[in-house]
Image (tube, rainbow, N blue to C red; front, top):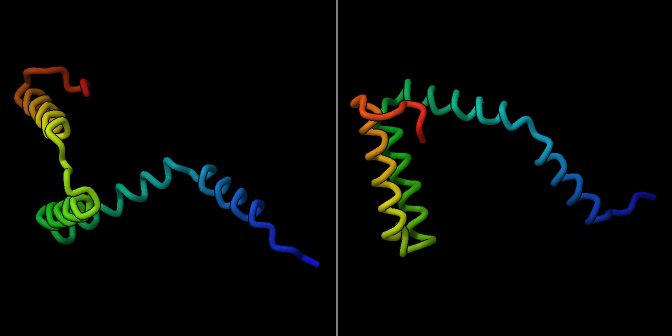
Length: 92
């Protein structure tokens, strides 16, 4: 007779999750968002990003913190510098 074993079921689920082909998952996700942007335009991507921002703010009303904003600004500044040719394009 088969008996439900919670530990076995949980372990099997975790192994299945960890053993996924994460490169394929990433590729599928990239292809999906490229298609969404192609069909609906870049404004749809901005709308979705804004919805995600609102969702995070519901969970964490204090987000983004001053440190988060400073890090975001630094990232945008670095991108701007690379786009105008003032920095190493491979730098992150």
